[in-house]
Structures are given as C-alpha cells and as structure tokens.
Length: 366
Image 1: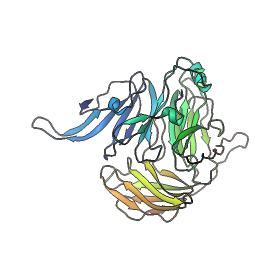
Image 2 (image 1 turned 120 degrees about the vertical axis):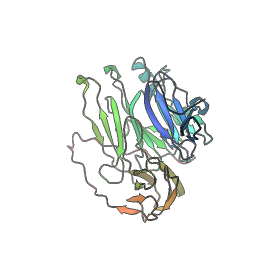
Image 3 (image 1 turned 60 degrees about the horizontal axis):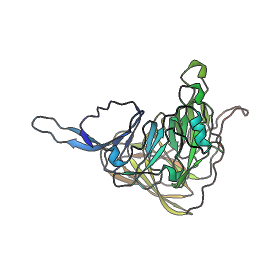
Image 4 (image 1 turned 135 degrees about the horizontal axis):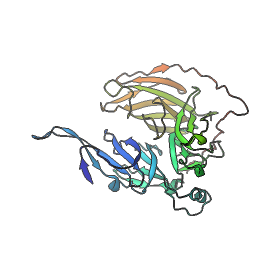
C-alpha cells in the first residue's frame, strides 16, 4: 500500500466508480485498467497542514489488500449493493480475447483463456470476496457499454452488458442478467429479447414513459462507417410489482444528492424488508437518471426512507403517503413532496417495435 495526496495514475484506465466501500461517509475510488491490475484508492480524508505544506486530501491505494486484483485486463465497472446488505459491491467486466471463438467457447461451457467478469462482494470489513462462480457470473462477456437497474421492480438490481470491440468479427449478443434475490444472476438475454447482435456502447436504464418500470436504451454500432447501426429502445411491459421514485435536492450536500445513501424500509405480504440504494448515474460507459427509481416487489407500504446526505454527513428520515408514486425530497425537510408523473405511450410500428419480454419468476427463497 502507498499513500498519495494526488491521484497521479499513469495507466490505460477504462472505467471508474466512486464507492464508499467502508461506509465512512467519504467516497473512495476504483479504477478499471486494461493491460494492468485494477486500482482502489481509499479516501483517508484531509491531511493536516504542516509548517511547510498546506492541508490537502490524502488517498491510499489498497486494491491488493482489499482483494480486487483478480483480473489483468478490464473495461466497464460499477459499484452497487447487489445483495442489499448495506455495503457497496463491485462488478468489473473483463476485456481481453484473441478471437471471438473464446467467447463462443465459454457460452458452450468449454474452456476459454479470455479475461472473465468478476463480482466482488463487500465483506463489510474493508475487504472483498470474489463470488463470481457462486452467483453465475464467472463468464467471458467482453464488455464495453454497461449499466444496471431493476427490470422487474423486485428490489434487486439487474444489469445489461453491451459487448464487442472495433473489429467486425466480434459481433456477439449483448447480455442481460437478472438478479435472483441476491443469490445468483440469471442470463435472460434470449428469453427476454435483449440479445441485440451489434456492438453495444452506452446503456441507460430509465422509466422513459413514466409508467413505473424501467425501460432500456442502448447506443449500438462500431467505430467504422460501414459498421453503423440504429440505437434501440426496449420498452418494459411491466411485471406487477410496486415502486417508488425519489428526486433528491441537497442544501448543504451537493444539489443533486450524488453519493447519498438511501434505505427504504417497506412491508407487504412477504413481511418487512430494507432496500439499499446509492444516488449515482449507474455503470461506466452509460448513464442513468439521478432520479432514483426503486422497485419494492410486493410491498404495499413504505414505513420510512432514511437518507445519509454526502458531504454534510447528515441523516434524514422522511415518510411518504403511498407506493407507486414519485416524490421530491429536500435535505432538511421532513415532508416529501409529491411529483405528478405524466404517463404516455410510445408510438412504434407493430412489425419493428422492440420490447422487453416478461422476466421469469424468481426462484423460491432458500
């Protein structure tokens, strides 16, 4: 480990994510590197001034000690709480193949030397555990664009991977993975209509028609003029679960509440649960709205919403009147204000309109 005061990194950095992995209220920084190991900088806070030096912020590079150096060539990455335990986890996609045959071999269950994706579960003690095999993500994805969201509003975060590189011989299906209750990820690419066969760049999850579920927009096409391809908008048909939307407005914290940690306490037929979210734009090489769109599953009541505001380090608790609604939450105000949503339908030709097929049912709790 080495302490630095400025992040003077010289590397082929392909992705980055701010992650407060030790829940100390200060954002740490993870860097995904192609042809080199990943870097994780712990935010040590302000370094006191001395007689010869002004006060400045300090960081310590801790990737090896934290256990997130299991790859040597990576591209998109992000932090999210995939298992809803209150600690941010890391997903880092691999990006190194010699031929497209290495991707095909992996899809067929054959050995492949290509770089694999990794999901690092936050143990809550400053270290991470590689759970890729246990959750079904030990795969060759060759990812470029990416993002995450909650497709079926069950309260568990899913993700979509845009694949490929500038070469024409890497026209491979983009991949969608559904979070099955924080225990494993299901590949629902084919069953749900996500396998667009073109190079996948930026990905966004957003409820574009304000009907309560997240749609997916993806930028497609390669780097060459002959490899142009129309972008796609995948409309979500809905899955019958409840939801809530939150737009944060900071006063002492930053105006958009970026970095805020949210805990939604809700109850329904399945009992009480807590859903954890962080206000950010999602994965790298893609961006989601800063309006939080949170699935609640079968929960019919929100008991409370707790927000830890970034920077100001203040904790706020608000209550809302009902589910399936949107609210504005201002820092320091006890009451959330209702935001009226104007739902509309997409106009599309029946023969060519893209849509998301219903997701499979979640497996029974173990």
